[in-house]
Image (cartoon, rainbow, N blue to C red; front, side, top):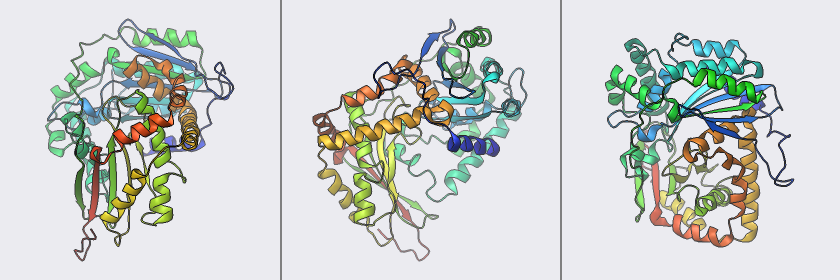
Length: 459
């Protein structure tokens, strides 16, 4: 997969901006993404969004299954299954899907997130039909064998060892924080997978998981790019239309109780050379006014050189060289569907104490009062970020929002309402959101303690 990732990163670097020929129905400064949305008889949600600015097409299939609701005692299973999807289907042998895309001049990838698993291909526009056929072929049925399962169990376990267990700051904070900040198992277990659980997965587990969650009535198909609408509809019906639907289980309760007391934890790390800190606050419920207010507070506190935490911790005190963070470390503030944290993290000098750092953060938080000017600047930054997301990687960001809004809200057209929702936010709402969600009792602090060679503990 290294070659795929290199090509994907190249596309990210060379990607064009947001399509310049979008209709301007809402005014000269607002975008309007074309959206045609319908559902096949088997339940597959289909979103078509044409864009003629480049002769490319994106096929993105999103399944409504992610880390959050994978089976208990099978941690990491959703991610393991992502790997299984490249092991062969009815008409394509092992790894032939990848070969098909690359030989047709395209790139591809897949990922597992909190609430979905996705697969996408970016190809020359004249190869759209081929990609639709290929995605339908593996939705119709995988080549599920013990050999493939055993092989991918080894691949995923090695990935865990390389990316988490044997890496300084491995899993910090994206994998660690949900386990500390949340209380509900579905939100708080090891999403990457415990090695014992990965070993315990059986062929029957894989078959059951596929037949249940990889069904058309648990999926959304987004097509973005330069294509003929009627031909695309014809191909989608031909290749996906007769795939049988499945009986979907009732989704578990993934809600989190209101946090009433600050939590603090320390993670020892023998490979780290500096202490690190992550601070997370539980988010408001998705799509509420406070949710959009938190999106703007993220811009004020963390994003960019003028962010308040950056100015305090980097420019004024020199405790760290950079503060990073945001809402949903495995995506963006839009593509999740459950409890989430607003979080920021940084490393800091061994000579600086944890207490000094927390005191500095508290100074920013305790003095945070949003003015109209601060709000206006945050909206400008958010709008810029949103346009980057929509136009990046030949429209992949657009496909992502269309597919997730179809899965989570049954309303992909809400992609055109986002800017308006942010503009509804007032300074009064912002300050109310600060009081309720950026309170100390709503936060979790996780510190990485480097185990220095001389056994000194800097904190």
